[in-house]
Image (cartoon, rainbow, N blue to C red; front, side, top):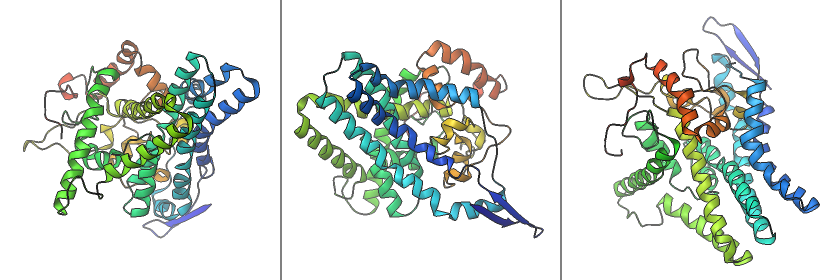
Length: 381
């Protein structure tokens, strides 16, 4: 596909998007668990159940390290044409199907197969993390203004039962990002486990409060059918009940574990995206505007293609409505040394995380630790 635009001087710019069809790689993570189940049913070799975990935490970080980064930006003159092309949005909408298919297939597989205990653990860790990718699809669609995309986004979020994500993310996180008041911004010296204990309940509390405020302004009760969070949780409960009816109560703990790991996948992303970064306060006591430098960025091409450019997070926070295909890189951004899943693995071992990331955060702050998010006690906003 060729896009054209004009410079201020009237010169015509012609641009071919080299990633146009590579974005279809975003479907691959959603197909990996299905491959795992098929191989197990063909071979009855439990090693096949390791495939999702090895793929997400081993193969993708390795490919990111070997293939490296892509810092290319589309010319500014063609961005409007790229954003108007419906192809990119259709890919995101189609992707909504995969986490739901994976979730239902996982529970059907677990409910009908006799597996060793470690297979259950590795399947849940691998598939739960992969299905947490539903939230990145919901993230992309949830930033759209129209109702249809919001519905697609809600469907994506509820593949892992995270009904409050769009509300909390758009109205809460984007307002308070990189401040001590934001439960979804990790503080300097805070481990992933301490962060999860603060972020998971804090995000739900803020999302519920934001939705209650929205409904109150419309003269409606928080317990009404118009509550988006209750709509999402209703869908989650109905599907879970159907799966339990089909495969028995033995699958209930696996449904809960699957959804929790999907939530935790988002928590890991939030952790690596803003670790230690702080927006300073102006003399009037207000935080400075969100800039690209307030998010950790990575251009590792393999994981970016599989996450709809979520890892170009700096431009996303500076321009929340910019769609994934036109997100930009900048020269002076805080950078992660690997893609997200590689950083998730690093964060799982806090001493290694601190050894790698604390010097980077301090360098970002010019060596002044007081310019980092140290987490002074503040109410959740």
